[in-house]
Image (cartoon, rainbow, N blue to C red):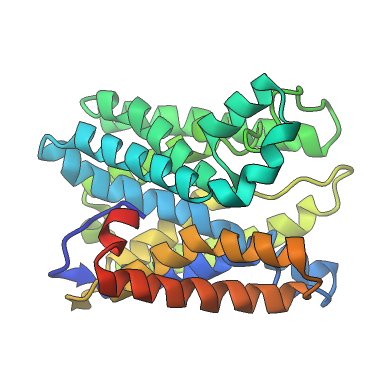
Length: 319
């Protein structure tokens, strides 16, 4: 993940949260609780695990603020774009079998918005490209933009799940109506940017933040169960409760006074996030291993490979 690169004075809680979130993202792609029933699936893979990407994006927006303040906003954008290009190239052997079946339009959409989990980097770059030129705007205007884009995403999600309309053909994987740079990446990136600009981690009471985080998680659990009752199924990437749960969890981590100097945890979280799909895709493609075993294989395999990359010094160019 591309929030920050300096080792001294790293926030230990942020790095631990990122590591936990990375393993939760793996759980979206290979459910470790598969077979325990629909309610468990809704609460985990379609519920709590959906906090992963929004909180990652909030952390990215938080550290983007300092880059912009130092006049490095464009450099930040180019680094995200380079990461995207590198990972799309590295995953080429995995997604190569898919390419012959694409029409030219599908191929263009695929390479612009990314293979599987790499949509995160594509969305981060596009959201950043919108936000960086707007960083001179007031916090109020930025929050209005974030609320409008997030609200639009919610309306699209609810409309799809209620069966009020269907998504046009262009809005298929990896570009979804309810999970794209406009309705998910941009509002979360703005949230992190505003948290840093307004010093909310320092201004808000830790007790208030913890209460908000618990309330947000409880609301998320209730919302994901409610969405499971709607006529049409849809991945729960965008839920109203994320507007409270994700910023509150990010703030709780950012308020921690614990610091450490090692990049090991951050490299592990980045490694697990970016590498796990190779393990998941190959396992599902060539074996009949159950989903919980695939999850364990993907987490352990990507963590081990991330450790090797960290020791060789390559991690700083990939994560």
